[in-house]
Length: 171
Image (cartoon, rainbow, N blue to C red; front, top):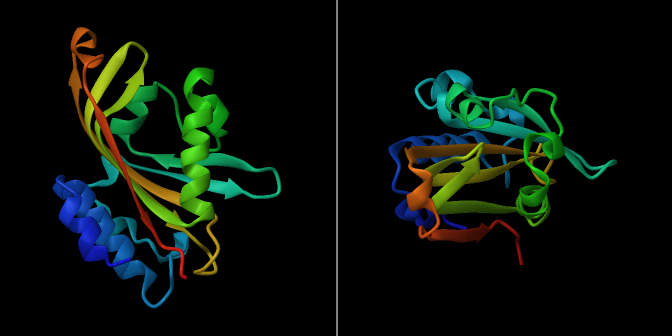
């Protein structure tokens, strides 16, 4: 997967910066590990960044961090919080399956449109989910970024969401 093809699709400068850093951090590996990510290189993007670790033994995602713009959406901390406690039950399965594909295939996920519906609030914007791998090859986490503008709930139902996948799987 050429990172340039993904970058051509991204509209947000915040997501572009995160994607470029992820690409640089992976070097010659398929994916970077968490230890390869340099928060100082993402200082202005951190309010929109979030991350999960994947516990393969229990088939579960655990929150690692979330910037203040992300935690404001959920009104809770992500740190050490299981994914099923972050998302309401009606959304959890979709979020879990998406996250599993990111780490398992592995693949990069990008969405544009209605990127969240939480606590009777809605956000229109763009989301990016990038796989992480401590060994450079086997997904064990996700580095994500979501930028959004709040919109009135009455207008949210008619907004589409575009999902796209960029596989990293080697033939």
